[in-house]
Amino acid sequence: MDERISRVLEKMKEKGIDQLLVSDPLSIRFLTGIMVNPGERLYALLLRTSGKHTIFLNYLYYVSNTGFEEVWFSDMDDQIGVLTRHIDTKGVLGIDKVFPARFLIPLQERCPELKTVWGSDCVDGVRAVKNAEEIEIMKHSTEINDLVMERAAAYIKEGMTEKQIADFIDAEYLKEGASGVSFDTIVCFGANAADQHHTPSETRTLKAGECILIDMGCVWHGYCSDMTRTIFIGEPTEEQKNIYNLVLKNQKMALNQIRDGANIKTIAKGVESDFNINGQTLIHSLGHGVGLDIHEAPIVGIKNDTCLKENMVITDEPGIYIAGNFGVRIEDTVLVTKKGAIALTESDKECIIIEAL
Image (cartoon, rainbow, N blue to C red; front, side, top):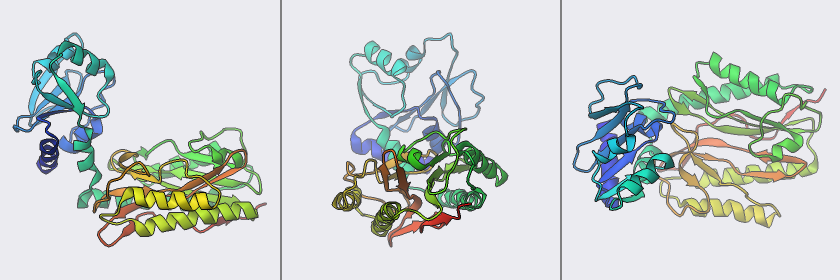
C-alpha cells in the first residue's frame, strides 16, 4: 500500500498539489486496504506531499488501526468544520471525482482563500496500471465470466425471457465463487439490442431470427470482469451478418493495435473511420479501464489523446445499433503489454448461431 501512495504523491508533486482529498471508497480501499460504504456521510483520506496523511471516519464505521492520523466524528458534528481544521485552507486542495457537492460547496464557501483543483487523475492514473497480483485476480474473474458465458449459450432457448437468462447468468456467477456482478447483467433481444444499456424484460420472449446481446461481468476478490457477445437464434439475415462482421473486424483491428505506448485517440479514430466508410457510426467510446470498478481510467475513445501503458486492463468493445431492428456489440477485457494486447476474455466471438426450434 505504501508503494501505491508513493506513486500518488509523485503525481501530486507533478501537478503542484500539496494536499489531496480522496473520497472514492474504492480508491481508499486501493490505497489502504480499508473498505467503507459511507452512504451520505463524510469519508475521506487526506494525502499530503509532506508525508503526513489523515483519514476522516464516522463513529459508525467499523474501522481500527488504520496506520494514519485518525479524525473521528459523529453525525451530530460539523463535518465541514472537521475538514477545515485539518486542511491548509489557504493552499491548493485536490478533489477527486466523487467528492459530493454537499461537502465541496460549503467547504469552498467557508474557505474563500482555498483553491480547489481537479486531482482525481493522481489516483486514477495509479489505479489504471495493475500490479501482478491484481492481474492474476482479474484473469480469474475473466475465467469465471468465460465459463458462465459458455453455460448461458447452452442454456438459451426460444421462448425464454430476457430476465430469465440474466437471472441464470447471475446465479452461475455465485456458483463459481464470485461475490456478485460487476454491473446489472444486460440481456436484450432483437430491437432491444439497439438500446446499449437495456434492462432485461420479464415478459419479452426470444423468437427465431432475433439476435441476443449479452453484456456481463462478475466480481472476484473485488475486481471486475466485462464481456459482450452477440448471438443469433437461427441463421442471421444478410444485414445482420454484414453488421456483425463489420463490428468483429474493427474489434480485432483495435485489439491488434493495443500495446504499451499506443495512442488511444488514434486507435479509436481508426474504428470510427471504418464505421463511417461503411455507413455506420461509432456512438460510444471504444472501451474503458476495468479494475476495482467496472468503469475506470482510461477512457478508450476519440477524446483521449494519451497513450496506453503496460499492465493497464481495458475493454475493446465497438458496437453498431440499428434502431428498431437489432444491435451488435463485441467486447473483450484486454491486458496491455509491451508486445501487444492479451485478450483475457477467451469466449468465442465468431458469429454464434443457436439452432431455432
